[in-house]
Image (cartoon, rainbow, N blue to C red; front, top):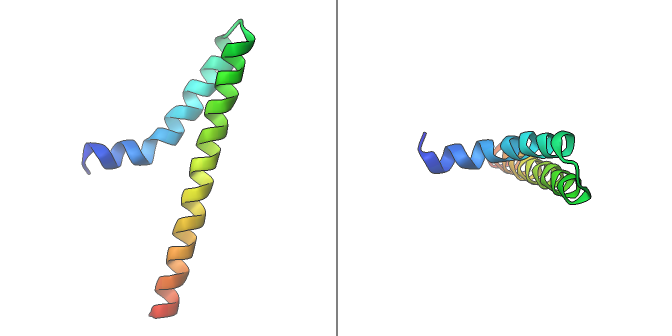
Amino acid sequence: MDLETCWYEFSPYLYVVVGVISIFYSTTVVGNIAGVLLIGAAVTILRLRWVHRRAEDKKVRKAG
């Protein structure tokens, strides 16, 4: 697995970790908002990947 693929697969999980750390250790509203936005971005990315992969699986099953 090359570096680009590793980053593609693991980046949403890193966003969640950094977002949670930001929320718990930030003393400002801006830090909390940044944490929530990072978690929201991660959830969005994971959901889009899940929908796309599920659609691709259906195409493969239908063609096969």
